[in-house]
Length: 448
Ligand SMILES: *Cc1c(COP(=O)(O)O)cnc(C)c1O
Figure (cartoon, rainbow, N blue to C red):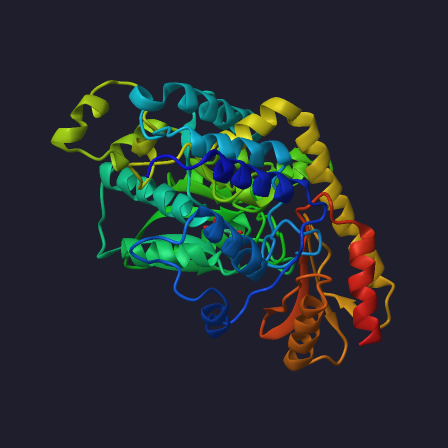
């Protein structure tokens, strides 16, 4: 069972080769479960169906029932746009059976991942002694950072009230609510200013008003998911320092914007962070799934997260850098390697250029929208998210239009909303998305 025929191996490589060569890939669309039941049926049996049949089923039925998130017209949520180098290297990672949890087992891989972390530390201006780990996604990254933050607060005097709490803006990502629920702590939502940003003043006011709780962290977002708004990191970081509270920056989507010359200045203050996250699978052109989680003082995170067990002591007592010790994970794929390979191949300048191209396109899209009578820009884009409405459209209009756009295999743009009002939103992270893609979509709205 642990070997296949040479033919099947070649067929799988051929499939991968073909998928990698698409430009663009087919957009495709989901199907209802009953439909997949009808087309694919029961796929697991005692005797197996054989590799060619399973591969054919995947290529003919299952793959066309999944949306290609790297299609240039995929502009919903946060798309993905992995470089070819990063996708190719993901194949190598899969073929290599590397345990990425410990230095003892994965030294070479961990060294390369740490090179990427060190690069992020240089870009953000944290001290050289900062360090971290690649985890599955921003949700796990935020949770792991906040667990370290609470551990730190417990160590430094502990809790005086009945409850722990952290402060974040009302525009912060849903994963922070998940973190609060998992940790059984409270959230204090601070008001944002008229441009949607969390300010130092708002955080100071929230701290003042925080009665009967101990605040163990202040979370700023550097690139909100809905609008790409970067909080006033410098001000918020200063308030956190003054009050000796852990400062976490959630940059899952937007922190990559620090690479673009035109948006770099928005991130002033990120160097004050005690921890930050940025997802390579969002805007650093790497495949799913990876989140870089970085700590100013990794030793606090190590003490907070290291798992202990008789079967692990050889590892934990080694004194070496074990990625497992810095988040809520043990066994881990060295998921930073696809990004490492692509960065090593192309160099950082190519990344700066790609991120800048996306920001530039977002500004051009905003310009087009401003010039259309039927459309209204909700906010000026700060990074690469553009949000707008069509005059007089109701939710049902947006839904119907969006479904037709996918049905016609033009693009995937689902309605979003803000303040209870539906809107349309382009999240641009794909360098193969062009102004023509955007224009075609806008033309279809005008014709609708
Ligand atoms: C996407 C996102 C997250 C969650 O990241 P996942 O990788 O989807 O778990 C957290 N914060 C922000 C700001 C995000 O955009």
